[in-house]
Image (cartoon, rainbow, N blue to C red; front, top):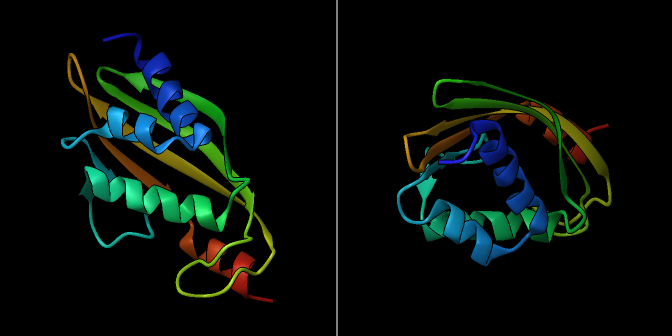
Length: 133
């Protein structure tokens, strides 16, 4: 496996590319993914459906890496998700509002593969930024 920092950056780069084929190659059927919008962990083609929904809701979505810290086979990425909501989200019509939500990903690797990604960010801030005030 390449350098853990490079592998972690590659994961963000693939999300930013908005290429579902590359996402599937990266996650496959064995890597698990968790996000506050989900009810538990998902993997395989379920990740692709989730990603497509996010891309449809925020076509200009960008994940901006602030820092990557690694230890052993774990990477922690501090990032900001930025974008304008121009598509339906959570069963509601687009608001046209711009969001910037700080976040952290905890990514685990073994010696030769990507095992899991758990994203942590403030769901209340997203809801307030999209639908509040």
